Length: 109
Length: 114
Image (cartoon, rainbow over all chains, first blue to last red; front, side, top):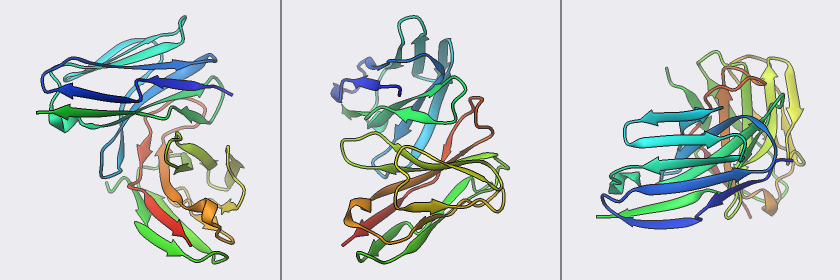
């Protein structure tokens, strides 16, 4: 079973700061997902990665397959970025996702 | 498109009662799944389906049943509710199962068992 570790568990930042959230996993994967869960509870998909880097607006996600590590970056953070960010991985040939416990981000004006 | 819908949003049950959580998607997705989310833990897979008529167990299936008679619907049944089933339940869907596709989540059902 894949183990997924996220760090930090909690993060408080001032508006405008550069944010980094890390995700490490223990077994080789076919894809890694970054998800966002707002205080209201809804979960939305931000990125799905199998290699390299993806960018969407102020969000950047990178994955290093050899090191079994991914990072999510937020540039010029804003209070509306306050949410829980969740990493999930999918093993090769598996139907199942394994989720990290999430990183709670609070951005203060 | 409505995406993934779940009903009800909130539910309180007494121990031993049964109920069905409804999930539907209008994106013609093959893969549907049910997760529970508990404080301090990651989302955990209860059951999943890779197409109509095909279901399988996830990490925490005990106490739950599912069926998939149509592509659109994937209900989750609690046969005899227990306080340990107090949780937030999410239904999700994606285009495929073994290949990797974007996941779409429903809004969640908050269930309390007393």
